[in-house]
Image (cartoon, rainbow over all chains, first blue to last red; front, side, top):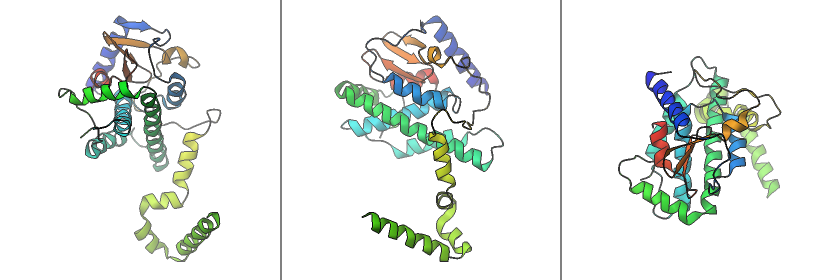
Length: 146
Length: 113
């Protein structure tokens, strides 16, 4: 693990400790499909680190928004670069079978995340797309859209 | 339609069987060979097998489980607010706005990508 990863994890833990909403239930106005995420994520915990999993979610979210929202299109070059970065960062000394198992798990994870986010977005499409359009307009934060 | 598909598959199998191996390697390539050879299918089958079956999972280097065995639920429900109106879920590595929409830009900030 790199120093920056260590720092990120430590900072994340500190934020979690100081700003924790605690291990209580999700907020009442939270529209995420909890059981779908829990079933999917419990199967894949530990395959990707925090940053990689967040990137997978970012790609999945961007793809879902591109399918649901007018005026938003995926940038395949950005997605390719991010996906390659995740896939290429493998643990050392994997066999071919292990490489294939990891690749398969990650691609299925991406498809699953995209599917759940599509469902969440479709359930409240107007708000979902309004947020996506606003995020796309934020020049300070990179995204996976054209 | 099914009969036509089966016939097409049989014809393809015959065609593959009749092509010398060196020629197959040139025309199919490693990905195609993994598909035709069933390796890719096995990997997908193993990945989507129900959770009662033992699975081989490839963990990232340095992974340390953030929860005790059997305690995924409380871990899954953990949340924190990096700013007012945004909730992030560490198990999911994703943040949401209070109106329920994904807070993707905050997710990028929190997880540093």
